[in-house]
Image (cartoon, rainbow, N blue to C red; front, side, top):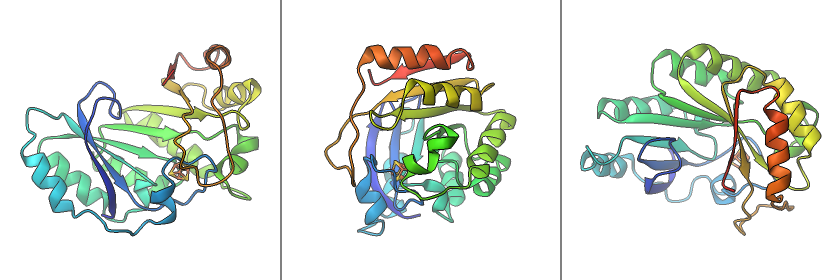
Length: 229
Ligand code: SF4
């Protein structure tokens, strides 16, 4: 697997668990507000050998609960399943982040029992999806299928939207809520300008505006919380 980053400890990336985070290189999308621009635009720079990760994990039994795999887009990696299997064979839980555009790969991993927790991005309302992904057009049947797969999988999962001024309005969040109705858990994440935006710009929204968006989404999703406020 093309690993371009490794964070040895996170209390945030894997809800309720102590974990490390592995960042894979490359992404099919070009979100203008991407905070992992380096992973997206230079996906092949100095990969970290998998063995380094497994050597680290072999000394973290009883300290870490799991491994979060994020990107970039991890499902672009042909051997992500092999990596997750090895992690699970070592006795750790796995968390997968995805933008939802690779339902076939997701289905395989779910069928093989390789994902314990998944987080899928919902970039925006259907009408503004392509704009928010930095693409002229996107095939929304793919994230829709990924959402269905997660719903039917029986694993714990969340959908989440990073809320960005200039990209998201209250009406957009309502439209997302209507679209994902029935999802058990939905998070609205505050945008943090990391200073390494790939292009364009966005800005964080005030807490009151985020709270109003959360309340709007709660009409459709039983659990909707703010994150990073
Ligand atoms: S899906 Fe994620 S990694 Fe890919 S461009 Fe968008 S924000 Fe960046």
